Each structure stands twice: as C-alpha cells, then as structure tokens.
Image: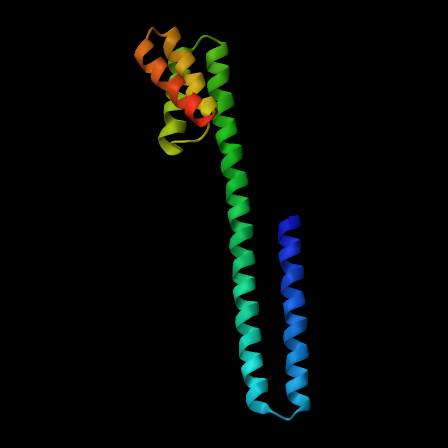
Length: 135
C-alpha cells in the first residue's frame, strides 16, 4: 500500500507541475502552447493512473496467489504428517501443475513423500529441483 501511496503522490506532483506550465502559458496568452501542455498533462496523468491501477491489481493478485500456494502446501504437509503420503503427493502434484515453480518447499515435501512411498527416482528428481529453486 505504501508503494501505491508513493505513486499517487508522484502523480499529484506531476499534475501540479503541469498546472504551473498551463498557468504560465495562459499568462502569455499562448493558447496553442496551453493546449499542448493540457494534452501532455492529461496524457501523463492517464498513463500514471493506468499504471497505478495495474500495479495495485498485480499486488492483489500476487498476494492472493501467495496465500493459495501456502494453503495448498499446508494441506500437503498435514497429509504427510498423518502418513497419508499418496494424498500429499496428489496435493503437491496439483499445486506444481498449476504453479510449476511455486516454491522449492513444494518439491522438497513431494520428494519426501515419494521417498516414503518407495519412489526413490522421483524423490531424487524432486529434491534436486527443490535445491535448484531454494539454494
């Protein structure tokens, strides 16, 4: 939210600069220059506004996505703790199918569960991927 506030303050500052330029052009009675500044000001403000909206939506999306990934990891960890290794693998498969490089932790946990199921080759591959993502 601080980033959004900073961006809005920047937009307001640019607007003030544009208004000063417009007032200067009006004082000179230069309508062509005033129109040029007005066009430039509205273009700058529109771009700033759109950029701020996109940034805010991206931040919300990332936050929601992060929470979803954490929930899926917790479900898989609970399955693992209760020795439901196949269910843990199934949950993690879904997570990694949707979010391939979600987190090294997902590959690590899936590797542990596969090892418990005797799937040693798959376990080693997941552990390697986990190490690559979380050095």
